[in-house]
Length: 454
Ligand code: PFF
Image (cartoon, rainbow, N blue to C red; front, top):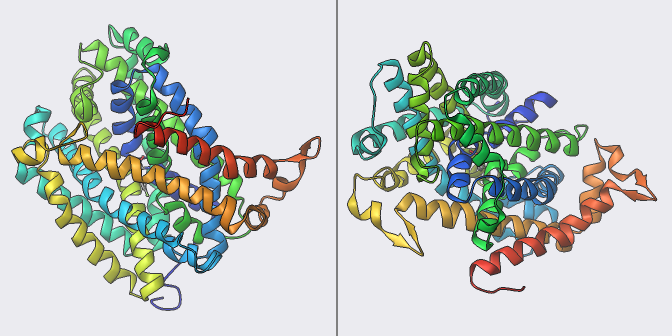
């Protein structure tokens, strides 16, 4: 198998959908979405987030899958293959850099989930601040998590990524539902539901919209070259549109459910919704303590959260790995280990930035405090939004929509059939990719840097 099919391809349609949804559903839904919602005003943020997901994220997800499948290449190769010689190939390199850098701190948080799983089983109560500040735990757990990621990625597409996603994703959903039932039935939970569902739009300003947009791209795994890479393993007879829809649907469902898990409990236990990155880790253990067989449920929950993180981290690692396999003909095993070890080493400062090292914990850049927060804002939000913008401009104006529409309609013949008055889904999609998405992203982006157009 080594050289004939180093690239690999998906074994089934559902396998691809679950792997792509596995990439999308992760810590972004259960850890990041609730705390960002809590920091940015609750329900109003959720409304802006949903608009970003359906109006900007969904068309751009289709966009990335089309670039990937048309080229059959990694994130860098895809730009070279579809329109050789343009500077847009830089977008591909940005994708690789972002996936790598985010993996380094994503691994730290995923490591915490492993620690919490073990602690739940041992019925030990751990205070979040103390735990996150322990350098030995954080570094070892980061190493364990990256190791798990490498072991799956080195096995390839079908027997690694696809096989695991098919089992683990459904299991996660069942677990989330069980935790929600407990959370919403706690005394005082109603206040949390209200906070999560009653919007107050006075809190919405440009940075909040950027955060919602960034969260949409983070959560959907759009703007990372990931969907280009996963799209490149896709068969022509599979519908890009239907697959993208299912990914968006599942991801949004789990994010919204993530909020229903966390906020009722936050209010029931009198915690502050804006307590930042520790929110999930602070509130959920209290929920488990109040449940029958809480230790076991806590253990299972954090195991599944680790797994959700794993189906995401394998996809993050896959982006640089597929680049090394495609462009440098490196064996998949070597590429996976090399990038994994490097990610572990580069992740160590992030592991020390939640209390272990004072300087890394309190370093401030433009109001973002701590290395992890800085990376999460500049790389995990700002550069991702920029990449999504570049992909949109690339397909809309450089590769040209005609080629993309041809690619998408293979496997989705309805895409070019008139809906009403001669207007097709393809027309609407082109309108978004060419104009609406890049213009909205540009306006939000410029606003952040103080350029207000309105
Ligand atoms: N979408 C993942 C999450 O919500 O946790 C994070 C992610 C995974 C982003 C893979 C990008 C990526 F390539």
